Image (cartoon, one colour):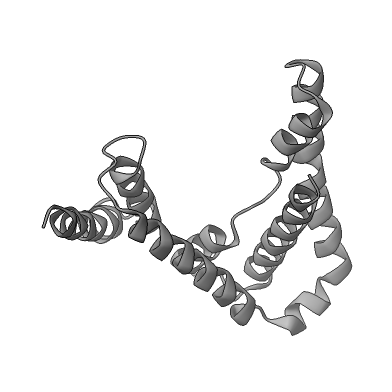
Length: 166
């Protein structure tokens, strides 16, 4: 029953930190902030109170969130901002990858593959988190919101392609 107890406590803390504290109490941060904090506390680096089942559920939730990002995209708006959005996505992805690669290769003295992996870890922008925050702020359906989501998806794809080649 210990795993059931920790699971129940985890769900209650997610609700309290996400909805009650962040959304209704502080009102300046999205509920995702409290939920991430609870995940860190209950995760393997602090309490290590969750079973591998929760990691599988988390991966499934992340996959569904990315699918939602694709379903919520307004392709007419994306076509309207197409070239500018694509340029911003490439610059926003390539620039952090390049800077992190250069620093880890020169300053830290890592080998080429390790430096490239370190650089790629700075490239992606979480489309799921971006969508959650933009929806909380009420700007997900605007041109700026669609541009941010499109950039986040392109960033994720670029980083995954490069990391898959290592």
